[in-house]
Amino acid sequence: MVAYTREQLLKRLQDKRAKGELIIAAGAGSGLSAKSIEAGGADMLLVFNSGKYRMDGHGSLSGWFAFGNANDVALSMGKNQVLPVVKEIPVICSCFAQDATKVIDYHLDEVIKNGFAGINNFPTMGMVDGNFRQQCELTNLGFYREAEMVRIAKTKGIFTMVYVFTPEESAMMAEAGADCIISHVGLTVGGMIGTTKSLTIEESADLTRNIMEAGKKFNSDIIWLAHGGPLATPSDLEEFVKFLPEIDGFVGASSMERIPTEEAIIATVKEFKAVKKSKRML
Image (cartoon, rainbow, N blue to C red; front, side, top):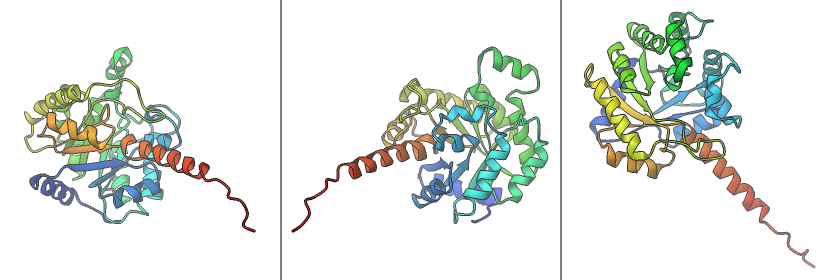
């Protein structure tokens, strides 16, 4: 494991952007996923509480439910399963800003003390809408808490990469000082537990462009990534980049570890099942 400062990680990403390379980040829900992601050449690795549930066979939305403390799950999984098995890849820890059991200021210190290279806002209120979202915003549980976490992280010199779902959230995070903003275009389609409803790739590019334009009004040097929705395969990303060549890269979670794992295991078991017994040699 290599510990990265905010400045070192930013330079690493900015150098890749300057070379015209797409930045590829991936979520890991197990140590084996983390080792494989690093071996595949990913530029960053993220640890989400939803990664645990996803690799246990449940949908990614499990990360929003009270099956366990989101901050404790992500921190424990990262320091006990992921960080011990990776070598050089920067590892980002997701943090739930609205956690009523934590002083987020101190929790961020704990995250960095354990060797993480930065933080991400997950679970996020950005996924929530309707009356429930409105009431969260009115009762000290809103998205603004995530922007406040970014401000705190900035004062501590911690790298921040954050999910946003709208241009308004993008502007809020850019103003707060986020280093990297991820346009979340919905739950990932495909596989055994993926969603079956999403934007088209072109619609996802249009939304991401609007998100980028809103954030650039506050900071023109933000690193811009996209995640989710119809972007489930490398060919999907290739098509997306044609619509939005100015994007800096991509974050995959289900697309990087769940769907490939499902497909590989299913195919391998079928191959074993296809083996036929031969007649005993005389």
